[in-house]
Image (cartoon, rainbow, N blue to C red; front, top):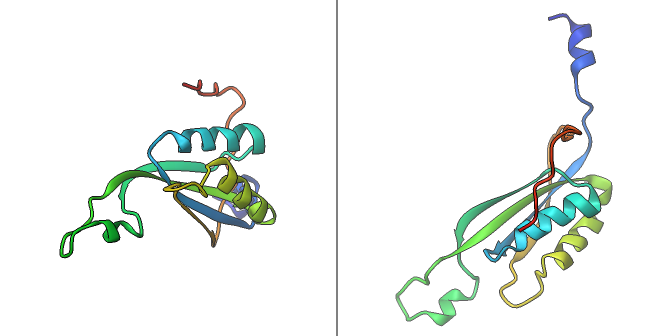
Length: 128
C-alpha cells in the first residue's frame, strides 16, 4: 500500500481520558450507558461483569475469614479530554455513586484512541 492511500484512510486521533467506575449489579450501568449515548452522545463505553468486594467488607467478617465477593459491573467510558471533568461529574450523579454501596469512580489518562462512530442505519437498542 502506498503512503498516500494509508494517509487518506487514517482516522484522526483525539486526546481522550478514561473514566472507569465500579457499580452495583442492579441495572445502573445500563441506564448510565444509555444516558451517555442519548444525552451526551458518548458511544465509547462498555460494561463487564466481575466479582468485587467493598473496602470495609473485612470489618463485617469474622477474624481470619475472607469477606464474600459480590457481583458488580465495571464500566469504562472513553471521553474527549476537554469534557472529562464535566462527564466525570455527570457519571457520578447519574449513577448515584454517592449513595451507600453506590460504587467508585476514577479518571485516568489514555495514550492513544481513535474516534468511534456508529453507522447511521444501526437501530438503537430498546430499553427494558
